[in-house]
Image 1 (cartoon, rainbow, N blue to C red):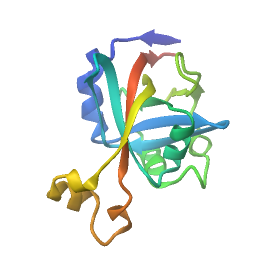
Image 2 (cartoon, rainbow, N blue to C red):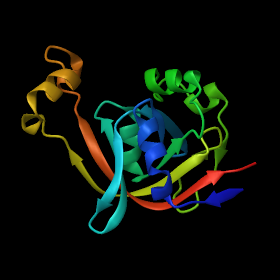
Image 3 (cartoon, rainbow, N blue to C red):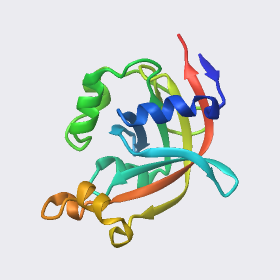
Length: 174
């Protein structure tokens, strides 16, 4: 069962939790992948409700998102299970099925082809309406040095920003 909510009513909760990690879920070619994200925001762009997520170029999630420009954002209502964050934040969907590994329960999306995750019941469904690769030459130096450390693989593994039109928001109930 889904209890539909106004995502703006939950914005403080979502933004507080994103710094600890929430999930971004995608699906393409019959494969579901979910990854922990710690960067993202909600807002209004082009007079539309938007959720912006940032995905590194090297991530398997990016390859799926580029094939199917839809995603869900999955947020716990209470504390996030640390195993979920560990697996989704350190393992690649190229190597393992994270959903199966964690025993997560998928629930079909309402307005997108990507599922919600029952264990993280607050769900935002989005359709990508714009995307932009980051131009690191325009990024303030201290941010660039912290997030794209010179001399490491991160130096060239920048992010793509995906602007998702919020098409539905709900809490999964038993």
